[in-house]
Image 1 (cartoon, rainbow over the protein chains, first blue to last red):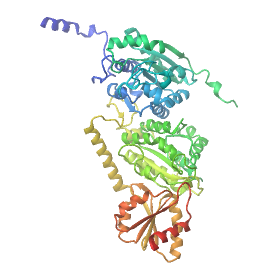
Image 2 (image 1 turned 60 degrees about the vertical axis):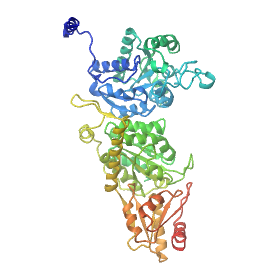
Image 3 (image 1 turned 120 degrees about the horizontal axis):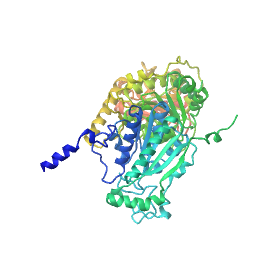
Length: 270
Length: 355
């Protein structure tokens, strides 16, 4: 095989480089399962921070859930929040350091179940933060239990016969609800299962960070994601399952894109 | 001025950077006073009404991560809601000041004064092995002074400090001497004080800072716990504060904190007029508890009476400190009832002298 190694060495040259890992993403081996979306979204955030040149001004708030260790991989200052409280933690950070970039990174259980109140009120105040919402319709870290976004009929550790509406209620489309709030400046739903989707998602994340610097209100990016381990599917099957089952319930695209033009309506005059 | 208003005045004047809170009786005047002063226009201090006490304490957690001086206030049920966040702050070693103007419980209880959160405050209150520094004001002046002191201690030890007041002190009106307005810390000062840990944006010149209480490796987590316990041991050795009134010749000593101590001062006068030599120890720090002075007097007096607005919580700490050397009894009222000095005097005679 020496000729193969020689050929590889001929290819590895600076002039042949078309893509490199952002230095904002460090070299630690991620703990995420094969096929998980977290790693891709981490990379996109790192790239956006790198390209915007805001590494020294950015503070991340990691959640409770699989992404609790996001702070191990992206080379910025981090605060780890209690379960569901990331929007309150980010509010505290941003209010005392309004010139910094602050973002939360939360899963569906964190953002849409235990932290629903903090999520709604942070967006309703129009906190100038970015919220990244990883929706994989399951609790990954605790072993695959039902999430607020779990689909009807979806089998999880706590819905062994599938999610039953009579017992568990409906999948929560929290992103649609948040888009109604005047404090929300930008609300979008993305995915990262193929290169085209990854490019779109990166654009959305970049836009969210740019909106933060404009102080227009909350920028909210949902990423419909996979959880191969929780879904008990291989990575390829997971992507297919997501496209077939998640996308009809959680359609991709922008839900709101604008400034808080209507905020004045809520003020008492005089 | 009113005790609660003075909390707000002291916060502004000592250069506090941010207050996050949620209305609850009997301490709502704290945030109302802050909002009326509009300190964000003068000093840049942030004042924000949160959607809940849970959000308040986690806003405090976030803002404290910047190395700035941050506080909140609430009353008993609200403090219960904050317990998780306080535990996180103790675990992540973040400084802050938390004011609890106690009301009677359990549950929704009453809005009348109480000291029934003594155990909650002094034994941590949330999950895990941690302690807060707990200051117990007995006057409006101390409400003021302990905000200033609270921030000093919070940053000295990187730990949350609780001011454990009660509805009497919160609503009481007294003369108070306010400190001169002090400026908020500059970024340079913050860097000097908290630059080794604050999350303010990772400069190229240093490694990233991570504020977390999480550590899955038990051997490291045990070391984290040992470090915390060493801090509490240091606090126990350095920060005990108490007031001893008429104890030198005392045969009996009452122990009381906060507004209960005010009542007991009158009881000392009443009983001394009767020729009974009674003294009073007023713990100012409830954690660290003034064990040594109690242990010292335990060998000299015929008995201690713990006077509390609860079912008898501090009495257990007195018993531990006295270690069987003398009699330790309890007298108190619950549910928002404040005893009068004669009632206390009668209890003292009955439980320690006749009993």
